[in-house]
Image (spheres, helix red, strand yellow):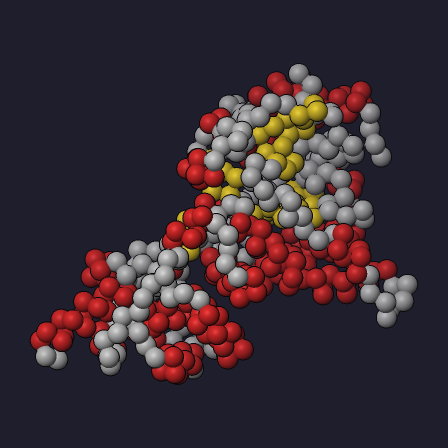
Length: 419
């Protein structure tokens, strides 16, 4: 149903007069750029709310809905149209991953949303938010807090929109077969015919992931349907009905889940590894500065006695964080000049101590890709790479900054002493 301007404005005045709606929209808007919509046209940008009551003040001036940025800013009002990447990186303090699902049929969108949330939960991202878009789709959120603040020395906040786009591409690649099967199942004109076109139409929207792109705020109305962008329980997506988005019956729930710090860290590293293997280097000035070529050190015979304690602990085997540990070990071994055959033997022997093991099917492509790439140093000890896998670097390690620096110093000391 499409509402005309007169009807929608009657609903907006009643709906947005609710103090709980004003508060919810205001709370979500903090540190975000917001932009009101006046039925067909948009308001000025950038804009922000100073108080919950500002929501209703804009409504009284004709605003019918509210949109906001997935980027989180130090001060949204300092945003300038046309600002450089460097200026944006300085002002941006983070970003939420917003996955936009839309289709001409709400049932298709439900299927896609359920598949994506289950996929994320399989990858240990258990705290995911979802809301109705207001029309025939959904918005899924993985909050900024869930992501590591750095990956291999790269500040995550500066990798927008590159990394969110890669994440969405990875999700699309991984779920597409299941999505085709599920959509084909509900149609069943012929159980042997798969509906490839419908699955393509409902795939997440990568266009949303672009600088200063806005999306409909939770509990904002939709002009064409007069429905509210209500928050759902991720377990009850299949039960959602459009009448549940009736603005006069909307119940407040938190769109941002109580996520754990760094919950999506291992997932992001896995995604970036996948992209590197399948699509090559990520085009980013920030990344190119960090990943400079490093020439390996060659001290002849390599002694484990000179390894940092953190590396020794990793080599004892792990239960969690093995994929990140593999990244650390490969780059450490390559940086200290370990021969390829010995490196591979050490990696596979280490994996036998892991519970469960990564397995050759996972490790072999990583080794192949590593030798096709320039040598880079392993992450510094002060990065969350180590704490993320349960390894706490010692004060001595922190002093040396990097595992390779530690190894070099210890090796030289022992050589000088004749040990």
